[in-house]
Image (cartoon, rainbow, N blue to C red; front, top):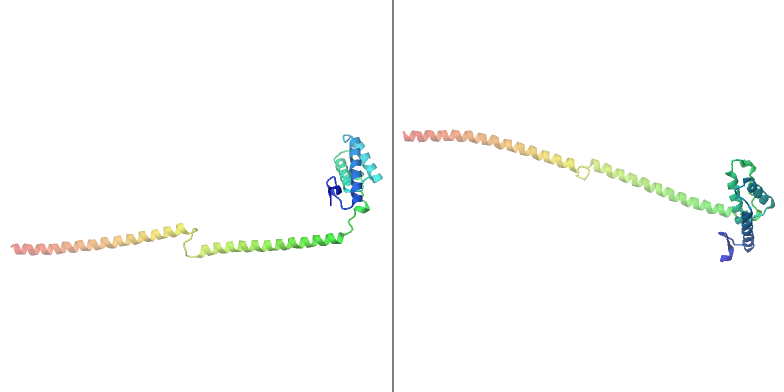
Length: 196
């Protein structure tokens, strides 16, 4: 398809249709130059005259008619039902509607499969994260989540053990001091006896 088949941004596969589109593009320029868009009544009349005469039969002309139609819909004094719809030419009707429908159906099926896979993957991901948190919460191993608590418990145990040992040592010291005093007293008594 060469550049000669592109008219006003539309690409045509049929040379006759492209020629008609070029003619309509010139017609659009002509009508634009002679239509005062600040006068809604004039735009309304031009729009309906173009529809009656079936001046436009290609996407180029239809785009201009749609532009006029959209403009007229914004005018408060013009009722929407007074604006006629744009009739589509017979040669603009797509004859291969079944082929298009089949392509869209296949595309929709592909997208649905992607969506199903995505949902399953996301579900699996969420379940795995929940399992990780469950395992972490119930395991006895020290992890980043329970590290502080485990450390505090360990220090509390050590402090309790040290306190118990210190208490036991003091008790033994007290017992030894009593025994020592008793022993010293016996020795002193012996020394005293020898001296006498």
